[in-house]
Length: 223
Image (cartoon, rainbow, N blue to C red; front, side, top):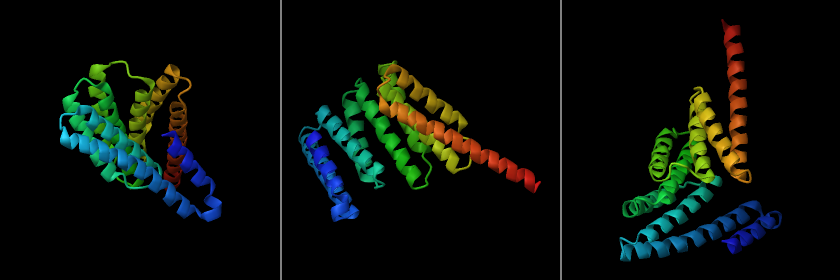
């Protein structure tokens, strides 16, 4: 919604004048109100016509967008993700050949994994569920689009971060993540999210190897 994005950006420009907390709260409220109104409309359609698959899919899409905003701003996306997955699961039952629904489910699970990492929890269950959704999508379309490759890469990157939190080697997961991001970049060089996430994976690789080398030297001195 370009108009809403423009208003939010104007609010952010006023940060120095009225205080960062007030502006952030105002931007968040505006964003959430916009999605909540759309969510309410789709929910009412779904309740009145339970088998109206596109209402469930659109409600799920709106809630995934809200959950992404919440995760990006360090907020709890639990309620948004719960609602999104309930709607998308129903949509998938009604439209079992709609690849995009499974892709949205995978995106919701990737956000769930990121949220788990923010709370220092294990992202593995969400990662596994996201990969299952991508496998379902691949049964319909075995040639994923670049944006779907980015979701797959993000799931692998979340797995890698979870392993780093537990002080386990993230190398296999990082290898998978970088391969996915590189494939996305090759398919669409203008897809900035793929290039950005590839840099994130490279940075995490360098960080892990530096810390592992330091730990090895420290162990050597102790012995």
